[in-house]
Image (cartoon, rainbow, N blue to C red; front, side, top):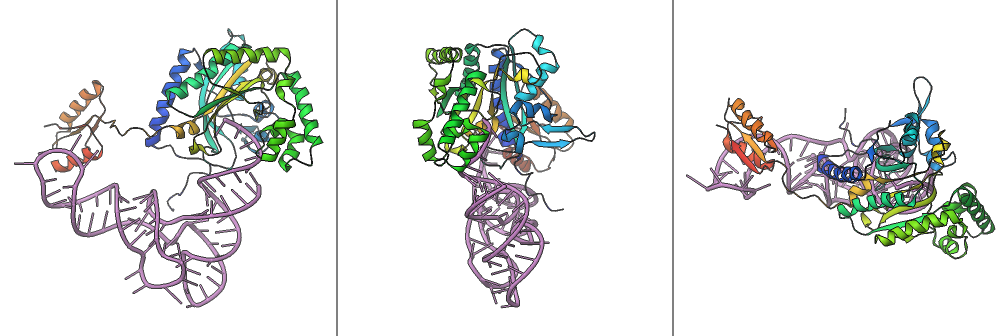
Length: 385
RNA sequence: GCAGACGUAGCCUAGCGGUUAAGGCCCCAGAUUGUGGUUCUGGUUAUCGUGGGUUCGAAUCCCAUCGUCUGCCCCA
């Protein structure tokens, strides 16, 4: 057999060079989550297809063309999770966490699967790290959770980040706005791009972040603004959140064109974007929002909820190169036949907390042993004799 | 799903119709080095992504296919 050339399309191998970065990020994130009393949940990598179909919305692109869906041997329709929230909500309900003290605060990390064209910062198997909260309707918890993401990025010394906020309104106000957008698009059908003509039917709000400059100009100047359609409740909710950002000096911008790809969002939505060119057009590294209707949609009681997810691969590519500092403290060599003695030293050093490697080759040539140690970049090379 | 660019050893690159496909890094072996990345010598590794076609002759031209990248769609 020929040497394999690539892993399957849209996937990648995480090599030791980079896994260190992942571990570092994971450690920092876990620390932040733990301190804010969020607890980890691990849910299956696949779920019944229906879970995702209902959560993301039957008409969404994710459901219609991006899911890895298959029948298992008993004919059940199974789907590899394309995002984390639906599975967490399902687990929340399956395990009766809706009866636990509110809010229930959870975090998760794991691979997600979407059948898409791969690009920089976009894979078919990718990893999301996310937070979910069930039971609180308050803007304060949104503020805290967004701060946690922001805080993580600051600790990682990632620069050039912007926080964009918007509200998509609650069910009622969004429906009215959606209708207004649809009418607006239909009135201007001849001027807008083919994609937007489609969006007029399928997802009118999506037109707002159309890439065509002429369309953008039209929407900016003439399209109805979501902020004008928010009812008092949504408006107050947003004001409290924005005031908290001001109070705690978190820079944000209100972006009225910001909408989400999944149907379940209500009220607050946000994205954290980078202007770093390393990610090309995939510049959103963290996004989320409120989804007060989802738990009920999946068969649970009316439950307020808020969450976000960040793309680990995207985040990692923004990190600076890690230092070349050696991770290996000792390399232990020994004369022929003296392994036992050498290994006692090894154990001893490891018990003291050092990272230690041994020369298994047991080369007779001392000089060569030394060179092996050098190649491993050991801080100290010692010989047991 | 659409559009464009690109696939030469583990990695980076040369060759762009004509003898046994070239170099650097890495790797392996040996020597050198009075002691932590020296220097030298030798060696392994490529059916030039894959499959067809054009041609006396293809890594080089054409087609298909797979993969990568950039943009669109969509999205973390």
